[in-house]
Image (cartoon, rainbow, N blue to C red):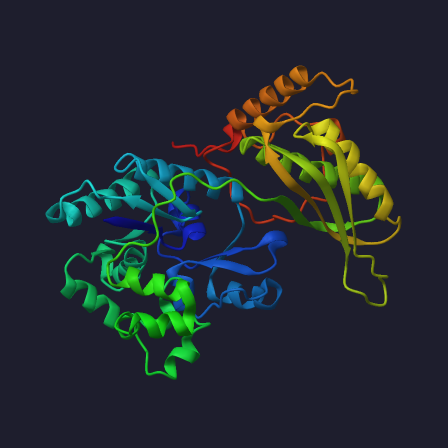
Length: 418
């Protein structure tokens, strides 16, 4: 048996944990640079606030409706996600992190008659330990757990549903529109409607030969999962990345090479941290820059440059040398740049590292330096230790004017209880 734990309105829920005054009030969270609405509390949804709507168009209306607006606080959300996952592991050590607000947990050791009790205990523990409200679906496969979690949302405050028996599976599948099935989505909906398939139950009852002919092995696997036959094992160990990318839009136009170098080196450092986390090395560094859309004020310059390294590495100074070399080839002074990014590709395992015959780098010393820097940044967060080329003030950073405090990771932003 598998449980899917899904936090409700995750970003908004994280904000409400540390601001009790938001309880029962409409709240929306904005995307990078305070651009669009990317999360809404139930109260905001009830007011008809649309997802992905541009903030500048709705600013007055949101104020009139009394909706609280917050900038994205990714540091807080990431830490709260880790706390939720660790709470789940206190019940089931085998956990697959599916996204920042969702995870699958193995409950195969729990007797069937204890599943409801275990699920309810887990839901209450997550609420008590983190303050996050979650819904939980439990079923014999990952797909049925997803279906059960969606069904649980309709069950009121309990927000827990188990599908164990054939009758329970049939009940939830008949109540699930085909477009809501995990892995199918709306893309197949029109085609399936033509064959009188409107619910997950209709799809699960089709012959294997028909499903394979129309939708291939992927469709057949989903059908088997809906029937209670597990085809998607829990992926407890995350696959290593094929490439690593960091990109951001700037809070204001960047026009000087110095500021662009700061941005590129900052993004490169974040990529390098993930590279070392995966115990991999990169052979190619790519840099790209984007201007604002062409208009009367701007001449467009969207360019990218890749450089093949002399040997695979994860050492920041070595990567920085080639990233700046790539930037020099594409940057044009005076242009108003809106966005930049760094991509590391051609990744290989660190164990297979081959050292160049004629090179003066002390690899043992550089490895120790990176280990110490990563340790300090992981412990104290917010990249307290960084290279001087990344700059100190970084005025080009994206706008986050309405961001709440990073209550779980910064000493000077902890909540004060009086």
